[in-house]
Length: 239
Image (cartoon, rainbow, N blue to C red):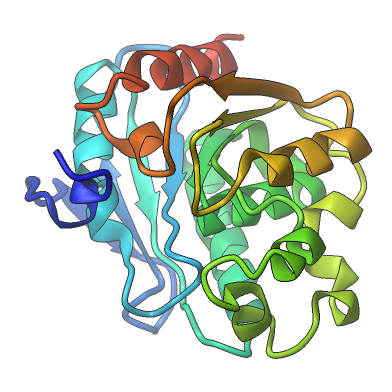
């Protein structure tokens, strides 16, 4: 199995899709039925904030989590190079819409989506009861220095990370709610050092390092890492 096979794996369409704005990318895909008392899990996909990567590659994950008893939403957002506020605004709008129907949610973001859920945890903590960031770009300045995704951070921001400290989770206030980062130590897309840099600034963060795990395994229900990921989501959704 290719490491990134999850990007093209077929999965069922969601039972419902709800618009949260006028743009085609301002939507929530919903798997609404879950076990009693389970909070809504909101997934935010990665792809280095680039337009060609969308929410569809998290449908296998959403379907599997829903089958395990969680109501699930997969949040889409505009991915506009040089306009980072579009993504952060859309994530917050989607979380507000989810909050109106279900109360505080647990966010699970991967890669660039991990950046976005960490940003939301710091800037809109009333909407979030827990955050699980999977292989996140948690430190934008470090990500720029490491040239992640062949310049993805600078392309997303439209300039240097130093000009946008308000978008860098590593530089924001520590989120008041629980935050867990799950990161494989064999990740060559976003090395685990990025997560460690965030945790050094926010030591209340729980960091789970998975030996031998790559970037995409943490969102792949067929991977050996999946059981550990589910355990961390379960821990974040338990009162």
